[in-house]
Length: 59
Image (cartoon, rainbow, N blue to C red):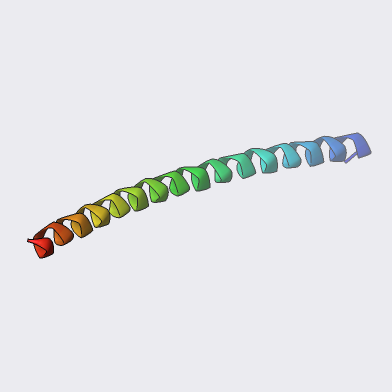
């Protein structure tokens, strides 16, 4: 294998690695967004429950 062929293969590997990293980052971003949304809903639900408890106990 010539030096230029080896260099081309190295560049292709780096390109594939960069694409894989971007793909993995997008998966992590989507998981983080989903977790953030779930936590936000849970927090809102807990706040509603706390308000309802305060209303019931104040009467």
